[in-house]
Image (tube, rainbow, N blue to C red; front, side, top):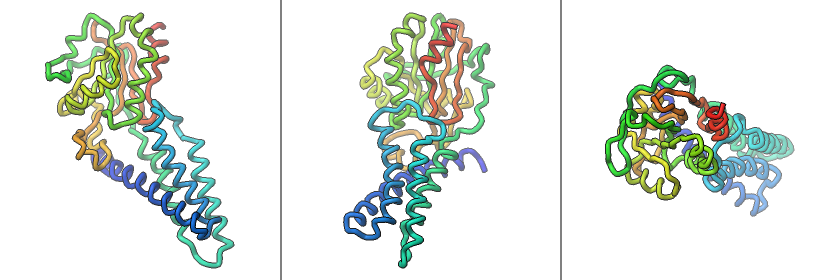
Length: 284
């Protein structure tokens, strides 16, 4: 099965999974309030609500990265589901609660182990000690920009999926805490996404930092570098004006001559490069 098809399945899965968790949480709360099989519905409701809280937390608290296995949330979802299943053994009347809980648990496992995985990341084009291939972009005003223009100054380059992605926006915002360090090291920060010029400009205005926000038109640069994720956009976000294809989160640093001196091609979309690791690598 091609990566594009797998990504399309993932995009549909994510939206369906989050919608399911919200639906089960609402139904569970309503049934508990009515006093219907509380011992059963408390477990499945807690499991579904834990999933909703996780995704809400990404948007509301700006999380730039998570732990690989999300152990705290995973234990909560698993424990609450098991509680619901064990409680069902004492019930005389069959209930859908344990089944709904097991679906939520299966969905959570799929999110952690399958959806989050970006697969093997080749460093053929972005490799320490190797010169970066020529890539071209536009700034948010439509002006042409080439990687050849970057020579003469160290540059931190981050390909991010778009301002619809909460982890991406948190990653960008986190850079502000290390702005002084990067300036002292003579590093210019460049942020690249395939989203529209206007969305990039709006994002730049919200961030309010002196970074270069560039548009990778039609994902041309991502294709050249081999970091494109076809159909990587969650299903339905197209109606908001975002590109269906997105880059895999990628971070690298170029020296004054356009040679890669640091590269992090994460294999998990939730695990983003720590700015302090970049600073430490540059100082080293």
